Length: 299
Image (cartoon, one colour):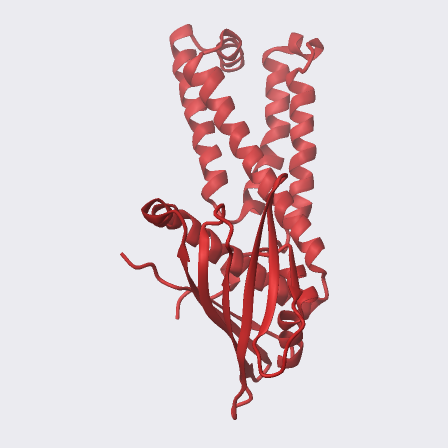
């Protein structure tokens, strides 16, 4: 089955020339577009397309290098501009072999509508096509996030690097809290039914052994569900606020249920205080994080 081209569109409240410069200047382009680590123009010959090379570092020891041609730049009667693109790489490790697309800049009453559409062929034959069912949505998402970073840069003046620091910090915290809740619910409660877990619940809620076991199962399941919600729910700020309310209560409850644990190494008191600090940092960073949701993803 033929895959659909990637399409991303965003309104930017900035003059068309500023959007054009930020996306056509290779040094500026590499700053806001997360798909590239660097872009270098090859000296252009007259009446020839503008050739360039690019790199994308994807790991400590992996860098994908590719080539591209930008041509067919047009200044239309309506004031719009467009630029076509041909790109590819000879490296076998890249999921993308070769592709084509275009950028279009349309003037609006209060700025510029900036859009792109591109498609590509994959490496690795049928396996590559199967991998592309995951990779293509990621490429579309990365393109949309990059467009939002560009929008915030041109509209508000916040540099792309500061936006990406905040964005990737939030992604790291998302993975951390999802892992934390799923692990705490699954391992010590649902799988192992640790005696101390059951003892704390029985003591805190004055339950019998059988009821305490059922309560631990329910709590464990709720924690696993909350961990999954961390991966799926878009507005992380709501989850962080919920944790800011919950962690102090859990700390007090743990101390009341088992005060002797306060003198243990890596005890619930210090553990929960650390989580409160991390949650507070996340809450401060979570305001105005770049998002793909600000872009239109279909024609």
